[in-house]
Image (cartoon, rainbow, N blue to C red; front, side):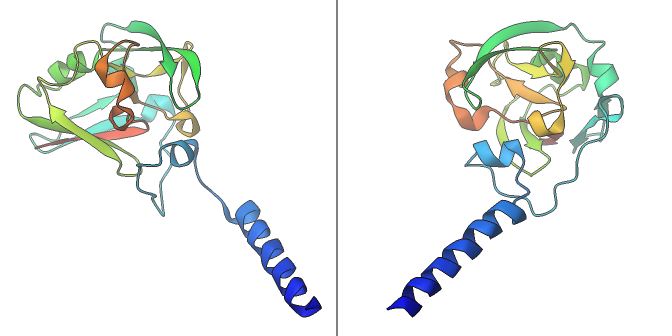
Length: 174
């Protein structure tokens, strides 16, 4: 009987130690249960070097600095993953699509961990932001940056958690 309890105790201790020492999950992995885990997610470069690449079409890219030249909007939203009101700044997603000449068809917005959401260029809400800043500061990768899609409170898309894509690094044309 003592051997059984000792074996259970050792197994529990090893399990807890493994959870504490082996975890390298990012904030995005921890809160987005629908996002597939990625075994080797590379961290994005500093915001001035961060790019979104268009896969398909002419293979255009748009940088953090180029995004900052588009009209910047600010919205305060209830951020469902941290359960707090947060202020985001950035261009409207439709303005980014226009700057990249993505006029029609579907666009899959993809994250560093390959999680994505697909909708037609005319289906994405006009008030959705491609946030480049949170509370006035560039968004760190560990906080879902450098780019993320956010929706204003009251938008039907705001309650559809699978539409919130963060750590965006590419748009795939369909």
